Length: 119
Image 1 (cartoon, rainbow, N blue to C red):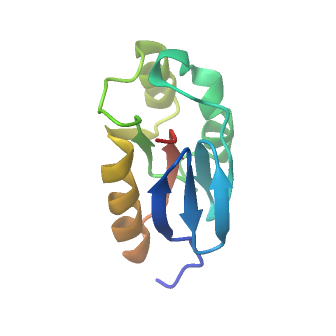
Image 2: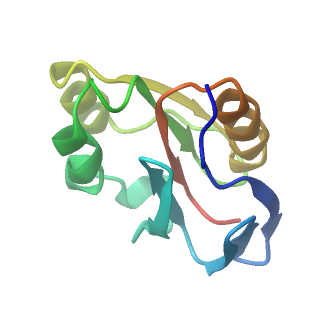
């Protein structure tokens, strides 16, 4: 399935360079649209940071690929529970791994959201 999902070319220096341009700070990619995401660390992560993803629903998003920053960490329980209640899966890993995984999965046509904490 052909998609127009932005590809992540590079990451680091506090942002991302996508096929659609440079984004400073953390990034949310939802329905193939990249937008700023106001999360700087896993410690501040809360369910409301996923409100747009939950609103899009399971029909638009199979799962969230969460880039946890420089080091992988378990997301807070309230975040995991909110996504589970919405029927949306959660995969989490360090941001560099999440960027590589995102590119592979979008090339395969998977319907996912990427929530990436800048490194």
